[in-house]
Length: 157
Image (cartoon, rainbow, N blue to C red; front, side):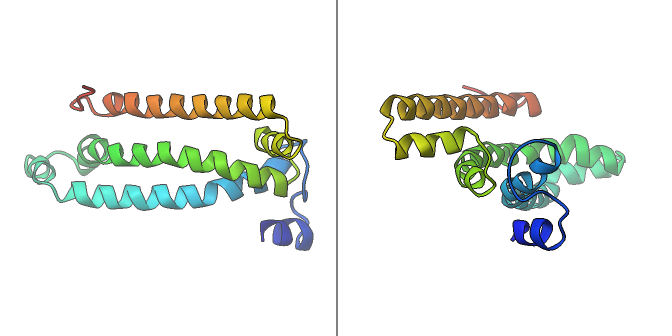
């Protein structure tokens, strides 16, 4: 749909290929739109849960500025489940990149894996899956370590 409207009908962005920043807009929108919606919903839900807690009411009763209550008290605690969802969305992003690279004719890792499978190049398939797996594990490690960075009260044990 993005190609149909923005490339064919209105001719704002190029249809496919790789070159300038204008070539990036449609693939980035394709990959990021669903993830952004999920993260926004999770953030809203988590903030609504935290805002109703007693310690938020106590902070407001003490006379702390609303901005400080929201950013320092509520958001800090609401970000823990959001960071988890961001880490999980990374796996979906990797999987979606394969299809997106094929649709937009971009030569990337996903397209290389598909071509390797099609050509039955087992060493390349194994190596690329190993790289993607290591990348996924590293992202999950970063997510786990970021819990402690966001909220000092989170125990990593």
